[in-house]
Amino acid sequence: MTATQAPTMTSTSKPAQSLRLCAESLTLNYGGRNIVENLDFEVPSGQVTAIIGPNGCGKSTLLRGFSRLLKPAGGRVHLDSKDVSKYGSRDFARRVGLLPQHPIAPDGITVADLVSRGRYPYQGMFSKASREDDAAVAWALEATHTEQLADVPVAELSGGQRQRVWIAMSLAQETDVLLLDEPTTYLDLAHQVDLLDLVVRLNRSRGTTMLLVLHELNLAARCADHLVAMKDGQIKMSGAPSEVLTRDNLAEVFGLDAVVSPDASGSPIVVPSPRKEML
Image 1 (cartoon, helix red, strand yellow):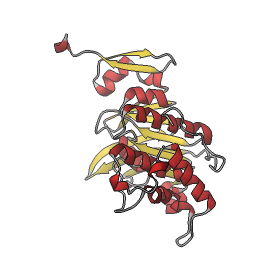
Image 2 (image 1 turned 135 degrees about the vertical axis):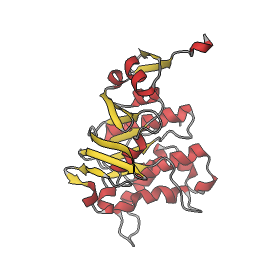
Image 3 (image 1 turned 60 degrees about the vertical axis):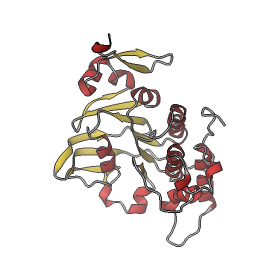
Image 4 (image 1 turned 180 degrees about the horizontal axis):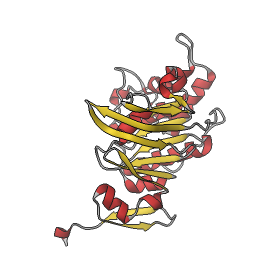
């Protein structure tokens, strides 16, 4: 199966609910230093949104706040008008999933066992996997082209294979909102495109709200319905890729001089200008 022939959603996958995930006057900090400060942002429901910005601007910190991994120092995050801290852990995990930058697998665990852990929000403490659980795991493995690795220990995988397995675990969770922090890490270009195409298909077929942190601007423009550009813990601009990825905006957010042109589909392509000393 090639990168452009990933399977579609199966009938066993439940449709996602349209949930409202918002930050209101949100402040997040590490070690007493504010990384995100007094930020207001509503994640576009049912769309693919990519957060872009320079290193250290607060992109990953914002995702941690949305996922409850980081407690707000001020303001709040709410899901459907309810503070996320008020949800039980399993109840929240059935609605919002997170793939962090550097997940750690338990020692000795196989691929299939790791992916099946995405089903924990739907299981009791001593219950066995249901047919729905098995179907969700099988689809997630197939969708990420990792079914042939099912019995392989995660520790024996390459970096790219391991990343696809973590994606599979996130997909098996079948959440309404999925937060992905730099999901293309360790992947070559073909698999980066494949993965982001899968994200788009999952959004289109289930209605899953996707919020991604991405560094590659052209891939962000290719996959996202909505871009959010951050700098110094604040949202500087947001909107359609063609509205956000302009020469002036790139200079303001990244300090980058670049030419921006549409591709054949109309998505913007960013080409950095040559350094002066190279001319």
